[in-house]
Length: 312
Image 1 (spheres, rainbow, N blue to C red):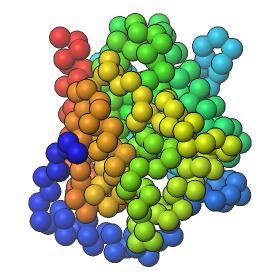
Image 2: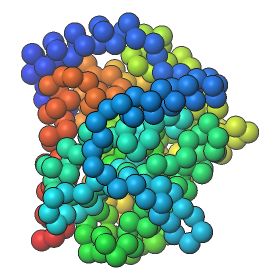
Image 3: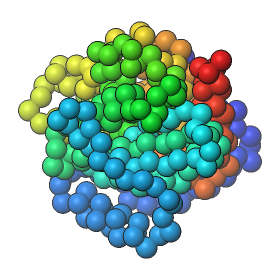
Image 4: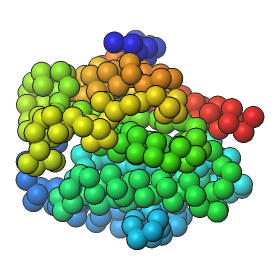
C-alpha cells in the first residue's frame, strides 16, 4: 500500500506510547444501541454550555428545499479561502461546535473562513440523510455570494472523513462546483461500510474503538442492506470513481482498526498523499502529544499552499 511513514522522533514515539497506556484504561467507543449515543450527546451539549465559546455565526442554510444548520468562524481580515469542516463522532454523536478549537487553529494559521456542518445524526436519520446534509452544505458554500471566487478545502475526521469523501464524489454531478474545491484533508476516515481487512481483523486490544464490534456497528448504520449494497459509492467511497477529485492529504494511525481504509483509498485517489502515524490510535489529532501538534501544523501548511497555488 502506498503511503509515507510519518517521521516521528524517538521522544515523540515514547510520548505516544505513554499516552496509549492511559488510553488502554478507557472504555472503547461502541455503537450498539440508540440510547448510549443520546446520553453522550446530552453530556457533550452540557459541557459545551459551561465552556468559553468562540465567536461564531450559527445559520440555517440551504439549496432548494433542503436546509442544514452550519457554524461559521471567520478570520479578522479578508479570508484567503474557505474550509468546509465535517466533524466526527461515529455518525451518532458530535456537533459542529465540537471542532471549534481545531477550526480556530485553521482560521488563525491559514486566514480562512470555516463552515462546519451540523448534520443530523444516525440515531434518528439514515446515514444517507447525513450525506444529503453535507452535500447541501457544500453546494450552498460553493454557490454563496459571500464566498464567491474563494478556493475551498474540505476537511473531515473519522465519520466526517467518510462524509467528506462521499460529498466530493456526489459533487461530480456539478463539475463546475467540484472545480472550486482545491483539496481535501482527511483524518482516519471510514471508506468501506462493510469493513476493510484491518477492521475485520481488529481484536479486543484496540484503543478508543471497539475492534471486535466494528463490523456489526457499520452494519447497524445501514439496516436492511446487503454487503454488496453497502459497497456502492458514495455510501462506501472506496469503490467510487475517484478520478477528477482534488488532491487529498490523508492521515491514519498504525494502531487504528481503520488503517486500511485510508491506505486503500489513497492508492486509488489521484494526487493523494497518505501518512501512516507510528504508535498512533484512532483520534490522535486530539491527543496532548507532540506528534498531534506536528500533524496539525503540517496540515495547515498544506492547506495554505493549496490556497496560494489556486490563487496563483
